[in-house]
Length: 60
Image (cartoon, one colour):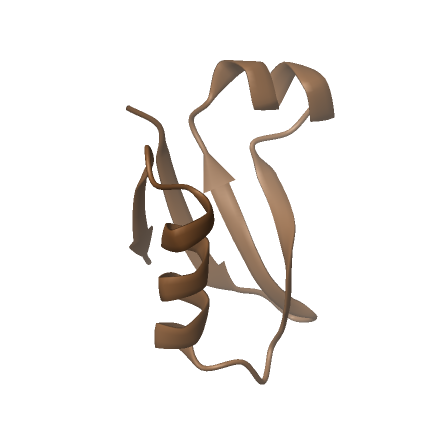
């Protein structure tokens, strides 16, 4: 199961993934989400979980 770790960066919310295919495609394990830094943590968590039902999504 993929683990997706959400964290708030300078410009918005990012996700760190352990999915090797994603890392190979993008050349990194950290990707931006569509959420700005002003988005509430619970909103981001719930939406990312909804979009990725097969992943373990957590806030760090």
